[in-house]
Amino acid sequence: MVFDEPVKNEQKTRWKKMEFIGRKKELTALEHAYQAHGSAFMPVYGRRRVGKSELIKHFIKDKQALYFLGKQAPPRLQLKEFLRNGASALNQPLLEQAQADDWQEAISLVLKQVSAEKKIVLVMDEFQWTAGACPELPSILQSFIDDDWGGRCKVFLILCGSYMGFMEKKVLGEKSPLFGRRSGQIFLKPFSFIEAGKFHPHRSTTEKAKVFFICGGIPYYLKFFSQAESVDIDIRKNFLNEFSALAREPEFLLREELKELKKYFGILTALSTGAVNNREMARITGIEERTLFYYLNNLAELGYIARHYPLTGSKPNPKQVHYKLQDPLLRFWFRFVYPNGSAIYQMDEKNAFMNLIKPHLEPYFGHCYEILCRDALGLLYRKEGLTCSYEVGEYWDKDVQIDIVGYRRDGVVDIGECKWGKVSSMGRLLKELKMKIASYPNTDNKTINGRLFLRSRRKLPDDSNIQVNSLDDLYSLA
Image (cartoon, rainbow, N blue to C red):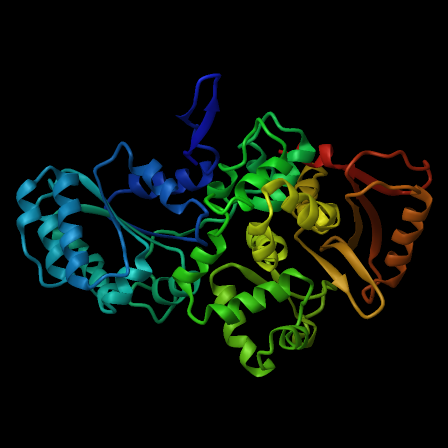
């Protein structure tokens, strides 16, 4: 991704351009569709702030392209802006003065200005807003695609959206007018912990991990964490200063997408403090269990929460579902910032951090480390040459909580224990892992391997048959 990075010298702080980080596979997919003979259509979707717009802008920077950003605005204003953008992109000033009553007419006016020998990239970003104001727009685009854009020119259409539920139903879904017409699709995911670490190459692996625990793989958030200062100071600057961009980021993010914010804030606060099921959330929020599904489903469609089930290889039991926050920044903000809002702004940044956040930070990071290790297990499998399919998750019942389960199709299950904090006794830790291995419901009689994930490498007895990986090991995986 391309971002501005603060560069300090003795006189001032200035900004310089950072390199575009990662997304090579996605750029290759876009380029392949663009280079194909004829027109093409590629939906690009993913949660907010994940870098969809930056990816597309990087792709079109050396191409003839019309980029249009949808807004929550009346159709007539959107049509006017579309024509204005077309006039600028095609160097056709008269196009800005043209009048269009609908999208069929507006797109036709633009296409008439494109040379038949050239291909144009037509980008409609935040498509959910444009289509929301004009529900017939998907059908209009379908007619253009089916008619090969009137034979006027070759068009590479990119529809980009942040509301995943909308994109999956109205663009990709079988009931959509656009169904079956795409050349491919890109579901843009957050960066992995390794990719996120490239934003701060001079940090230690421990500090890279801490930044990831707070920002996740979201490039917009990662850019706010300086390489020159400690993570503690970055937390103070970005969350405890009421004028900083991230101090109210979750509030602005959710306000743009959702109504009934009080209920959503209650649910997210409950999730961030350990509630995992409808009963617990209903008790904490006061929202009736039977109505919670509506709110949880909306949060899931936005990519902010996800449903999890104990991983055993069997069909998931809906009664065992746990809801968990997927977004690290939301998780951090609703755990530490939102519940302490009044106290934070009554104290200075340093005291607020030392009293309200610092004492609870290491246990919080311990939970986050479990998530990172689950992400890393697939990379370990690749390094180890595993060729079969697998699932990675966790397991829980009323008696045991297992941090990592790697359920492999080669007759093996990996059971993992994660320790972010200091390990005082390796013997006790091994005993705990063996107890969890014995508690796992191995109904298929698979071979069970034990794995330990520690922040720092520790030596085990030669006969332990337990594989140990440190944080440095995980960050060395490519």
